[in-house]
Image (cartoon, rainbow, N blue to C red; front, side):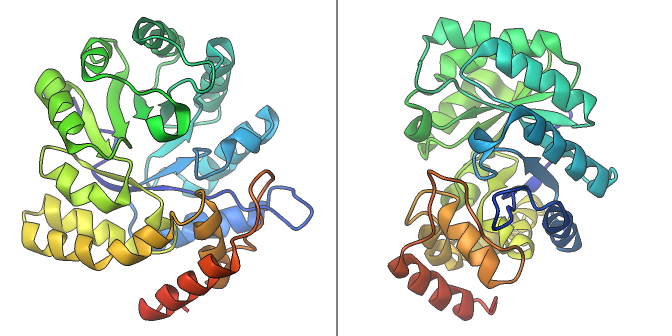
Length: 294
């Protein structure tokens, strides 16, 4: 199994104008900032990209614009997960038609299904498209996760090639590795345990931090992949403070504030997300200065 990427993929924010429209020139600039800093892949229209607030036409337009801007330089992975299987299948087909290289599919949320339902849900999408799929387990947001046993069953489905593990539970990652082996490329969905997860066979991270520190995040994973585990570990520890600050409030509130302070975009959010609190702003400002970002 050839992985979609190794190293660091940025879960890219979606920039909006003050009027609430998608800011496509800013999106182009964000993509170029990532590529200029050596990022290994881009995840578009994921949780960090506020996909749940996008209309379907906007969703596909953002994917298409990113594909056009990237021009094949790195893989573009499109978030097309849904809690309605038919809707998710339609989004996934449209993302494939828009040029996405792969898909990222979160577990169904709110109307939580069973593990048997997960297998049926994901199999339906895998059978509807011809591009590879990374599954996404983030029980803290969705209220349900993919058990290692279910992941083992899904690893036998053609097209399902990876897992973004945002459980924060290294024991879970170990069990997935035990049951799935190299059939599934494992990626950390939590910046603060990227290196620990790589130590049990993970291939990298799908990162929020790399929106504002792409070079540092990419260098951390590259060091591990090159065998310099000590450097990777030191980098992980050094980044812990700013990673924690990015999750002081619901993601992507803090990272959008930080990106705006750095001049990367205007930082507007779509409700129900609102501007970062004063406490978060003050903390982020201090950390951005500490890391030489403002």
